Image 1 (tube, rainbow, N blue to C red):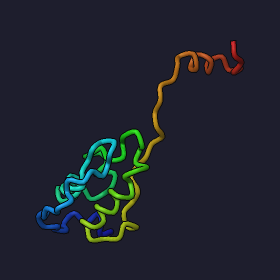
Image 2 (cartoon, rainbow, N blue to C red):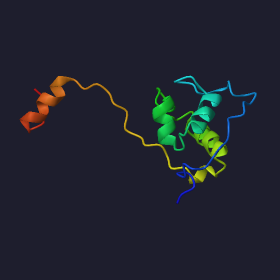
Image 3 (cartoon, rainbow, N blue to C red):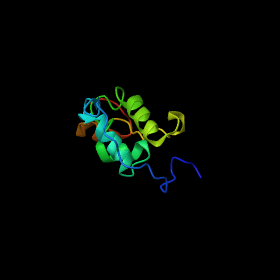
Image 4 (cartoon, one colour):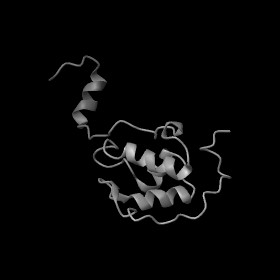
Length: 112
């Protein structure tokens, strides 16, 4: 069994650190302490952390904080960052005008 997914591992209580108030995810204003606490609450994967705290879901889509979050989670679990699977990502969603959908139905793709 992969030791990252071993939920029986007791991490012990979270011991506060002086830099726990440092903001790691600037877009969502998530601190190092919040990430550490999430790990101690049972969030052992980056995808779980992302869903629980919204790290990497702001405007930068994790471009700024992804490596930092990965390092914090790995340290709390006592493993190498390489052992953590990357968080599930999706392409950014943007609004599409209805005329784009209307043109798709015509099949010729020509502009009117």
